[in-house]
Image (tube, rainbow, N blue to C red; front, side, top):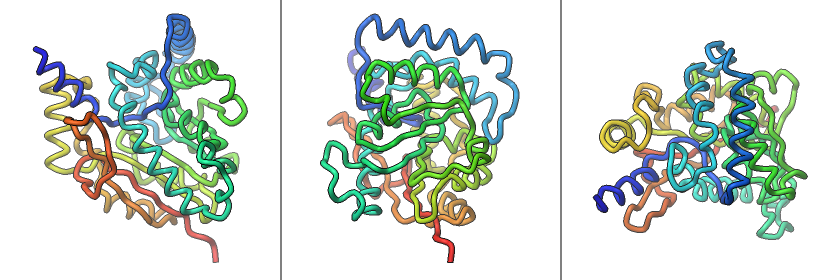
Length: 304
């Protein structure tokens, strides 16, 4: 039994496929605040669960909103693996942006390495990635089609008043935001593209939000035999780490497919890394192995 619990903890981290934090929510009052936020948002959105919204899959939206109150449960539950993976994702994004905007960011202190960078996080869920980027000094806007997710994200961010100055949330789709003509130095969409209705159209939409010469980060699960065994057979059907049906193998994307879609959206893939879990050290690391989880950094072309 102890061995099975250990395997389950490790596997939860190894099969991460959503979004993750760097701060811990503690205390009964925090839990109550998040639950109240979830209940309020759920009551106002349940009637529209089946309506398609841009590239948002209505069933996927409803699934994530039903678990919204669990976004900041770091130790167990459907998003625990994202929390474990988050530091690696943040490090990849931070380092890539520091190389990309070397002159502009050179004078920033390490604790505010991304100060001055305007970032949009698309499909932010409960705000795991968004909070981490804001804590690095970036000016972060985070959006999600699910109002219940946004309510939880706002409630959690409110626990730290320092986040108010450079982190804002909005329940809106990428298409709606693009229609306003807003653009950003950097757009992130991590563990999202495998849950949308049309990944190419989604990539085209989010690329419109990237300024010329700006950065676009996409992470997802590769479509390989290994990913099928680990992310679906093991995680969903054997260990029960994530609910059955969480993933559809046919929606997984290869790095080559992501590169082609980015190119269609006038973005060039500049960097690619795998994200690999070491169960012996209970730790994620960046790797050249992209057979399961990977993250890509693309740069939008500059008009002639």
